[in-house]
Length: 259
Image 1 (cartoon, rainbow, N blue to C red):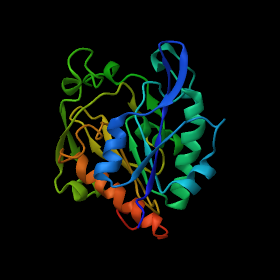
Image 2 (cartoon, helix red, strand yellow):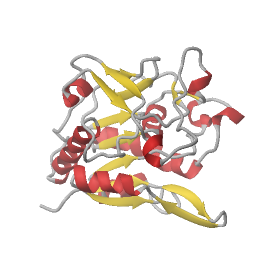
Image 3 (cartoon, rainbow, N blue to C red):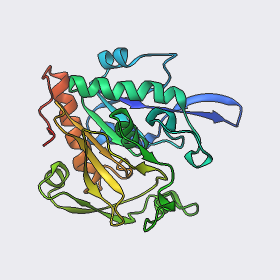
Image 4 (cartoon, rainbow, N blue to C red):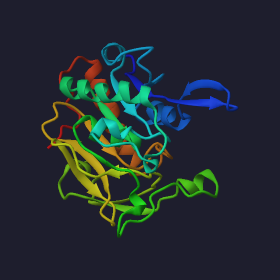
């Protein structure tokens, strides 16, 4: 059987501050190809080029990636402030309806960092503009200095709900992860279940109540060292299994159902 096609949500950026481009990290493509055993396809996240409906016909699953711009607060009913940072409105207009459509259909989604936040907003939740400004919270942002390996270093624990989907997937209630984000969940959407927290209380792992298919979100970056990291590998393997089930025509995917 042909490997499942995994749509990787791309990001917009400028080459040499003047040439507009769409692209995606090779880390995401490596994780999809090597661990999920899928065919990575980077998607230009702009409704000028495609729609959620068209993408769902082409792809078997979707990886919602991290990205420097944040979801615009207008999407969850708040006014824009300087603390909310940079935005990517075209990406908002693709990913938010895509999440809702995939949830309805049961089509597999794995959401990372910004993607984790997109799922919460798409399902009616809100975000904190800056986690490190909240009392008792650590700075979850990427370290400004050091090598790439040092920036992706495992920095804090994530504690899962005992016998929840993540604990069952990982085979344990506590793991170590990296952390490279500024924003985070303030109020979870009505169906969003927070299944893992950092020690400071920051939500780190989510699934959807009564979701018909595979949808998991993590606030950390499991694409780093995905083939060898004991936390990242089972996450991408389960995602790949769900995408293969979808490609076989199973509706909904059987791979890892929400509790």
